[in-house]
Length: 294
Image 1 (cartoon, rainbow, N blue to C red):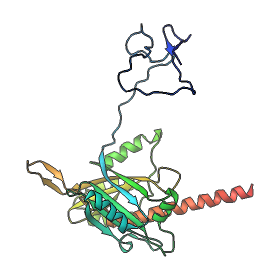
Image 2 (image 1 turned 60 degrees about the horizontal axis):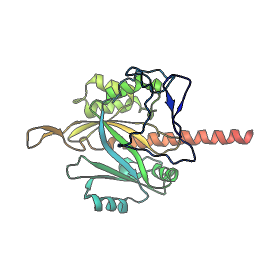
Image 3 (image 1 turned 90 degrees about the vertical axis):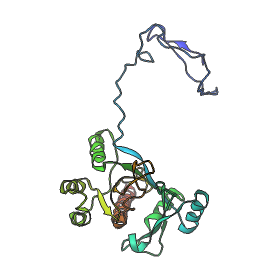
Image 4 (image 1 turned 180 degrees about the vertical axis):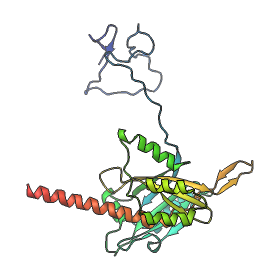
């Protein structure tokens, strides 16, 4: 529809698209646009009756890039072969249900990586015949097939990142998985007490951050609950400490996959997701019972 004058302000016109017309989104080269408030000063609102609102600077929370993206698949071997076939990735790490499962369910996992090992693709498959259905199978059922289980966002200071996220949580945010027990952090002191200070370990405990270590570096990580109403996609915040090397120009960089993939935390994460699924099942059962009662 052509622009039409409005009574809200002199010199203003508003154009609306008719449902019967085809909308065209032009990037460059279209000069027949309408200029609102042509006689107004620069910075005036773009529509009559609107007031300018200062926009705070975008917060990055200290996050810099994707560390890795995890996929859940029905069968690990063919999926890993498929990805390796067209990417040239190699096997970086492998975990079985004996490494990462719980008493009730399990998974098998393989991590693929590029040559420099700074692009990481873990893949998980469910293990069947266990007491509970594998959380990987639960994901596949709710997702309607294979897909991204979680995305890990890298931070140079995960404690700062979480503090900033908490400070802005009133505006909406993520819920994190339940923290481990205090006994867990006694183990952290034994595993990483020479790298993390006592104050840092206490803050990890307050925030629920998981800590693991391999022979090269230390890993700090925390996981959100699923971002939707189904047990599917969630996020991870991760920090890797150590593994610094120098390139041919003498510039320092961190070796890819430093600190591993939290093998020591896999069971803790797996149990947290199991507990989340159990609470979700209890809520669904209660809602169904209430619906039948009404």
